[in-house]
Image (tube, rainbow, N blue to C red; front, side, top):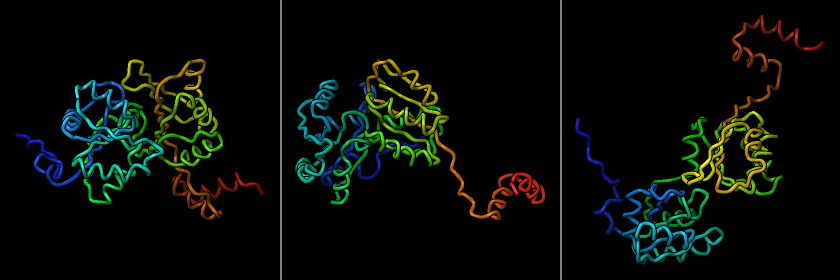
Length: 280
């Protein structure tokens, strides 16, 4: 059976590039230079304007792939609101632009959301160029349920806020994926040891790089593996999902109804058990 030829989605192919300004959102390697896609390289070579989270990192990337003559504009966290108006005008002037982050997929815990939102609001097409993403890469090898999962980004820095933050999400029936700094990972694991001591965890450090490391186990086990070491590199932490807690019954009748449904016991047998377990 002959397979149909692969085609670009409508609005993103060669024939549609004359239709006005557009923004490409391009994923770049997490560390291994061979993880870049051919489509990203072709677009970076063709498009005149690159919007980068880190302009120095962008120029280093261009040097690796032999890309020359690029005009590079910065867009880093804390300056998105200030820069968005100017960047929209620059995209219109250039015709095409590419948004890249320091590593991985832009917008995912990286700058770019406000620029993308503004482009869409003003009718500037935004086209994804898929590729590396630390959250998805870690989840794919964690050996934990991936459906459903909830991406949390970076956790709060203050211990009190961290605990409150984790408590809220741990009560949900989702696998959790979060980013953490090597300076704060032990504090996060200590909080998880207290709040969810039996929850399975997966830690990925320095993904796709020379000293890549994967650790699986409870919070206690991961802490033991990291204690006394100098921890370096970016960390992605996957937290196995919890069980959804049923609502607390508000009456004896509601409790009986829930137990009948969940246990499969007869009403007579259940009533006998409840009389035995309930003090007079």
